[in-house]
Length: 263
Image (cartoon, one colour):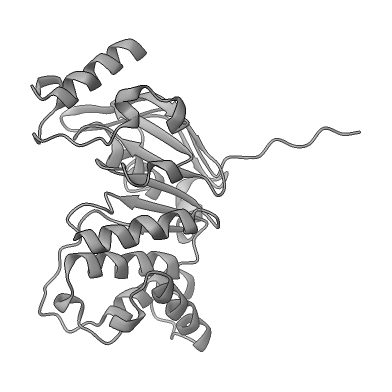
């Protein structure tokens, strides 16, 4: 009998390095994410979490190494990737509704100048229902709370009908009710697609995550949360917004001990 074929990762990074003007941000990253796998990337500010997401979106080109999404170069599969950015700046007085924002997720499927069809509207309606914002469809996006807007942006990403969902700090700057809703939504979504989420705070959602990656320029740990060092399993939240190398708080001191042990 033939042996079963090993699953192919939907995201694959091999010896990936990335840099900005100030120097290297990622060094030698090897990372695989499989279909319907929920991955949380944690680590201090400047550790490289957002940079990985930019690489997966094709917004940044690696200085070394290879990035593959769905087995192809990123630019070929971008319409199959949903994305929720950390922050969206916009004119709060601009007259655009939550429905219009969510429906923007269909542009990659329809094209910029092609009209929406009934099928597009049905997909957008379902995406907003799943994100629990359908009741806000007629509200102006500028009138919504930060948590409500974040869920509208998730609906926009779901309207893409993605095979992969990327979220950059989706739990930051949202109210507790919105946070609880997002934390409940993501595990359900991961049963249908791969999810990569960057976050400083994954405490409540950690039991639902399949893999956790600890980034400090290098990928110092990547595996099951239950097998991670104790410091990583705890909620990653630092009271000081600075590089952990120079932070005096007990959490960062423990993180530094973990990093030294893993090197």
